[in-house]
Length: 70
Length: 348
Image 1 (cartoon, one colour):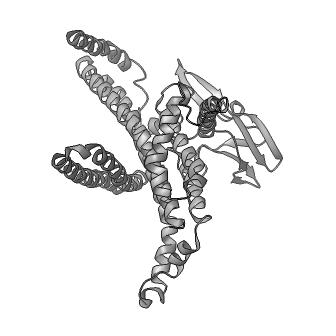
Image 2 (image 1 turned 90 degrees about the vertical axis):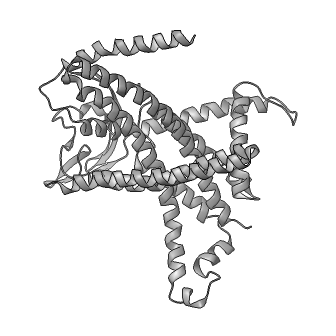
Image 3 (image 1 turned 90 degrees about the horizontal axis):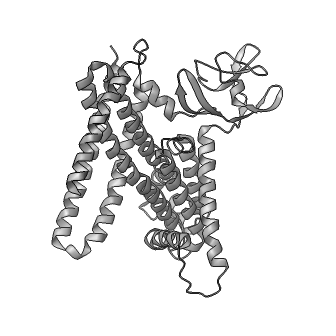
């Protein structure tokens, strides 16, 4: 009964879910903002990428914990 | 042009199938463990392993510098890297707490000597440091030779000036504030070191391919450097806000807010460390695991293994492109967050 490995795998799947949801919401609001005001597309794109990197950083804390449990 | 590209792609994919068939004929006896292979490529080691041809390892031996119970020793790592070799009482432990590290038996107990060897990660870091130094010192010569103030450089100096200018204007000046010039050297060094190191980690062949920023010790010291830059140059106002903030008395008499703020001094660089480490480590692991997938499906027959090889190849190309973006982005985010923390600690 290798609960540690099962827990690690399920934990990693949950991290992916959280990261994908967060980055999806960022992408959604970025698209809406660009559609409203196309001339600020460059600024919005840069901010979107930065915030996506930060959200992904948080989810990777959890991935590292899962790797340690594996 | 479009048709040519399509034909070339189909031909390349078809050529992959017989290569996959030959992969199945090799080593069916041993258990192939992807986890072991991935960890072996990502972990630090005393020698730089390039390839294995017909059971002969081709390695670059690196210097080992230790201070054991018998004094300082400097020797090449191929004296202890073979199975069961010892040198002056030191050997590489195979299991236990000090697995894969140099240990010696003192009074029957396994102990680690003081080990400052140039391991693979250290050599990778030194290599990227040399590349950054050479690039920028060569570019700086173009400015020394000319006296006019609005000189517009061409070539390498021009390229680097564009990159440095964009980082200065978009990250350093807005985030650090009025005295950005004091911190610009540290922040630019951090950015270029992380960027070049991440890029070198993506090259699969000898001088590249060392997993430097994917090693938590390296990112730990970068985070410590940021912590020093933030806290040693902080203004009085910054420290007052930590220890006696402007909040109602019931939050600061039982030291609730001050404790949270003190913990915050450590969690901010901790987050920087974990973000960079996890992103780069995960990226390298994914690419290596996709490579292992080819070998795992090798013995399932030519059609299955050929198609899985093609899929793995395309996915690996995609992941490598994504890792190029991640290499730049992680350097940018590290520099930006360091600049923000430094700016918050300065006089407003």
